[in-house]
Structures are given as structure tokens and as C-alpha cells.
Length: 132
Image 1 (cartoon, rainbow, N blue to C red):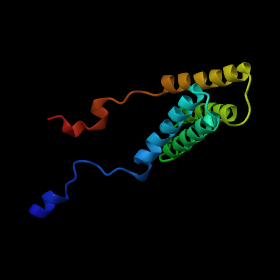
Image 2 (image 1 turned 180 degrees about the horizontal axis):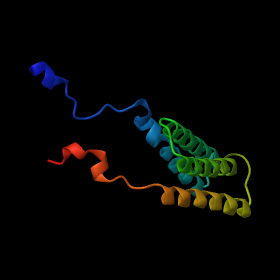
Image 3 (image 1 turned 180 degrees about the vertical axis):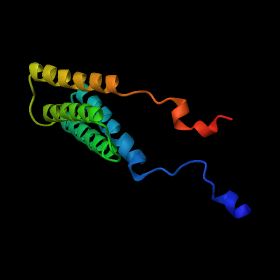
Image 4 (image 1 turned 90 degrees about the horizontal axis):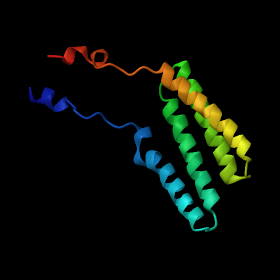
């Protein structure tokens, strides 16, 4: 009897892609890059570009972990396009404001499509046997 009770795990194990470095490292790099930019120190754009690249890599990993519906693909492609343009802007060459407006419009369309098509999960659909 004791063996059965000891096998129950109340907290699920974290997957490799939920490690703190993958989650927080891009944010840390972006914050450090912004602070360097505020202080007008060298390498600010490069540090922000590294942070954006790591955030884009994290998005790829989280997106391809499971199968996604088409509306999430639209949002994912819009988000990756925004990351790529920001990465080019901070890492390589300065882009025009009209380019940013076009990319932000594409991203806004992706967000709107995702918000319209995604439905919030109802509690009854998740665990109907837990209602006692």
C-alpha cells in the first residue's frame, strides 16, 4: 500500500524547454542592452540583437513542441517577422519607420486573428470528473 502512495506525484516534472535559462535569458539580454543604450555604451545594439535572437529561438521551441491550429500559425509567423525586423534593425542596419509600420501592421493582424479564433477553455471541458 505504501508503494502505491509513494508513486503519486502531485507536481508534474518540468520539461527541458521550461528551464529558467531559456525563459529568462532573452529578457536579461534585452534589459542589459537597453541599459547600455541608455548610457550610450558600446555594444548596446549587439546585446539587444542577441536578446531578440534568443527570444526568437525560444518562440520556435515553444511553438514546435506541440501541434498548433492554423490561426496560431498566423500569429507565430507575424511574431517571427517582427523579431527578424527588430533583429536586423538592432544588429545590422537601421530600418526606416515605414518598414516598422508595415511590420507592426502585420503583427497586429496576427494578434487580431489569434484573439478572434482562440476560444478560452471552459472548466467543465478540462476535468468533468473533478466536480464532486
